[in-house]
Image (cartoon, rainbow, N blue to C red):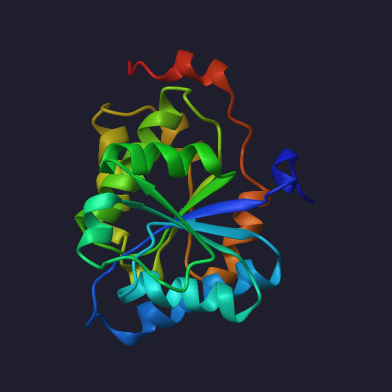
Length: 201
């Protein structure tokens, strides 16, 4: 049964723009994109034209979906944008890019990636912890990639740097692209009142 998150129109996906990673990461990105396209859900992402980003966008477009790329101007000047994107939004800065993406979407998903992906993931988790948004967040743990990150989050709770409610209810972890939408639809309600839980004890 779907929750109040059943009206999902746009999903942000954070992932790597690196070539040369093991192919199964690219395959999972393509599969997630294809699922979004088939479901009529618009993909919002960083507009990268290589790596998991490209495979993600290709999957969405090949399924007849819409891809919205959000990218800072300096990256466009470097030729890092994806010319296949249905729509490209050019921002002045990285900060504006991230804020624009979060504002535009109904949920956020993190595929494997490097420090940029980690930064985006943790920023949207931080904003959620502070009650600045209540949107579902899903981590796709392909091949156990995020195991060390999840272990670090568990340690934050054990050593009281983070409250259990944030570890247990703020995000979901899945192992495959097929589990992403069910995790979003079943996400725990999270409103501004959760700001009261932001202070660790």
